[in-house]
Image (cartoon, rainbow, N blue to C red):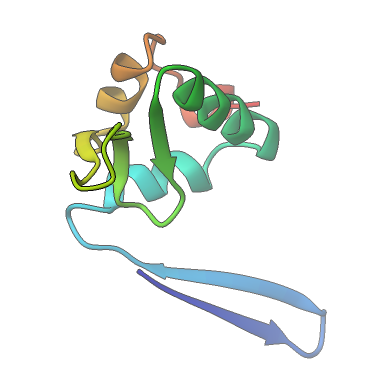
Length: 97
């Protein structure tokens, strides 16, 4: 993922541009359309379940208990897959407060 922040000098707005691959699109969409509080809730729930939701868009991973084994990607191809893996009903972006 490439994160570029551009400052608009007239109005002092900053704009984040994300370039996503097909593999990162759904996770980035989920994270970037949710409020900060909603994202914290999802990440906290993931941690409680032994998972990690990556803000870089790579997906939802089951954390390996062994350092020698990589974490396993279990969701992220769709937003719904992440909600389901966390045991939550799907929420539309405008509901992610």
